[in-house]
Amino acid sequence: MSMRLLQLQDDGDFSLVKFSGNKIPRHAVLSHTWGSDNKEVTFQDITNGTAKDKAGYRKICFCREQAKQNGLQYFWIDTCCIDTSSSQELSEAINSMFCWYKNAERCYMYLSDVSNCTSDEDGECIRRWKPAFKKSRWFTRGWTLQELIAPPSVEFFSKEGTCLGNKQSLEQTLHEITDIAVEALRGRPLSWFSVNKRFLWAKERTTTREKNAAYCLLGIFDIQMELLYAEGREKALKRLKKKIREHADGQDLSLDEEQKRILLDSLRFDQIDARQITIKNAHAKTYK
Image 1 (spheres, rainbow, N blue to C red):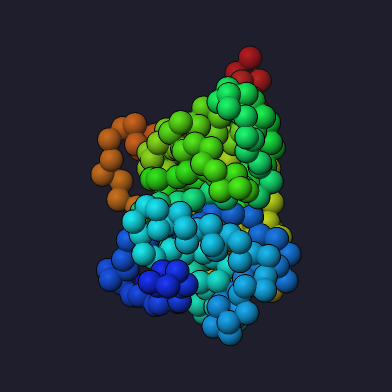
Image 2 (image 1 turned 60 degrees about the vertical axis):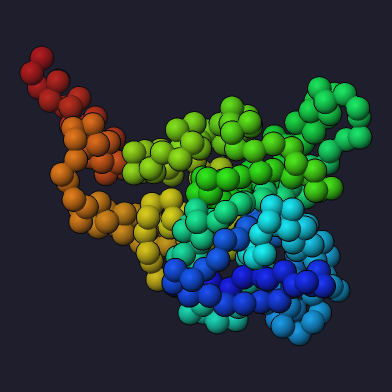
């Protein structure tokens, strides 16, 4: 598995460097919501030297400075570290995304629609940014689900670059906004949570491209899947569910009883559960 990172130079500038396997250095990653395509800095912008002309360059500078403060020379941003003109590279990146976030030294959540205040009273500050925080577009996007769950170190920042808190200090708020189990936010293996439960975490989230509603969940279910960008949302989700069943069938079942129960429960999709209830009701009427 290879990964392209931005390397901070001595003069404050940065350049793209590609690493492979276990040679990937300590680095930070950025989680954000994309603006329109013509505003985000792409791989081509970095290589052509036109990055500074884009509005999205501000986010790159933020990530660079934050990584520098944390003693990190390398950082990664999805808009410009992936060559999306290569279908093979894009497919490999999407299938690797969960691991990339999980293995990052730091993950910075940049909320472009949340502003901090200049009040001297901390309590008053919180009251001012908390409502906007809870309504942030970041919590409605499909890709940011894995970006919240996967990394062990997560920090949230306002559009001014002010740290608002981390995954630990904002744990209860994050749970209330997303309905993600606190145990999952704390890093409990996702295999402990049923398939239906994990799908519910993504239920209200949206993606720009419909088929990405399935692709953004690959890491949530520990699935590798070929990307077919001609397919629609329903076909992509159908393939994903098939892969989930195949993955579960191939797992080692030398588990304790609680783990077996959770695994078996996770294989029962809503339609199957409904049929089981119908059958039970029919049996009950028969025996009356």
